[in-house]
Image (cartoon, rainbow, N blue to C red):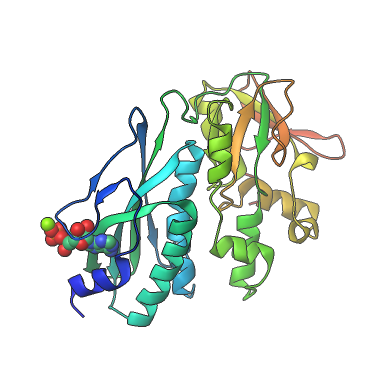
Length: 303
Ligand code: ADP
Ligand code: MG
């Protein structure tokens, strides 16, 4: 199978009406929605580093797109188009069929069109560039936090770290392991919060580290974080407290949104208030027994 047959076979898929010309020409031709701003992101996933080598191809396809869509979600954007750069050790038809099935399953759910890309030979590496759009002034940014605002999350911090732990232990059917393989990007949340939240980002590197990005972007602010208010699932709830906090605060791969919200206003149903923004600097952790301690910048001391 030559490169062009491979692209036609596995990567020509139905496209949105905002695609004038998709894969097949020298470049894609697109119609951006009138008056909207474009939101662009790129993430590269390397086998063994960003996903386990033994992950099924369908999950790899799903997950590589999901991490990009999560960035669009975190900007409050509507997903539109993506480009796929695929570096493959070999053209294995079974692998390609499964990979593209997982990829397009999520693409169709999210309403995003594959409009082009590149295929080369080499160690497995998947880069996706995704573009969305947002009305001017409505993008969710990291620099919009203000002292006094409520700090809130969607999803379950620690689920990604728990899922990786399960995956490594050979557990594939737990809620966390399924979330790890197929994280759902918080697209509906991003659009719901756009124009309303102060600051927002998606939690990909762990809650504390990502909170640090909001605090520094918003001008060296600080935060109070109430550990008892962090959402959990049954699998996290079953862990020893210290172990659970380590995953919740520093686990990574959660892909929920962390955002700030006007003081005194209830956060939207389904999100959870977990603390508040202060003049800072630094993050103070409030333990269930009343103890308060400073979080290590960028991480959790037990991790
Ligand atoms: P060129 O050599 O002109 O850069 P390519 O051979 O890289 O062309 O690509 C030919 C066409 O196929 C282009 O329209 C490109 O966007 C598309 N394409 C290449 N790889 C992929 C892919 N993985 N998924 C979708 N379209 C692809
Ligand atoms: Mg060309």
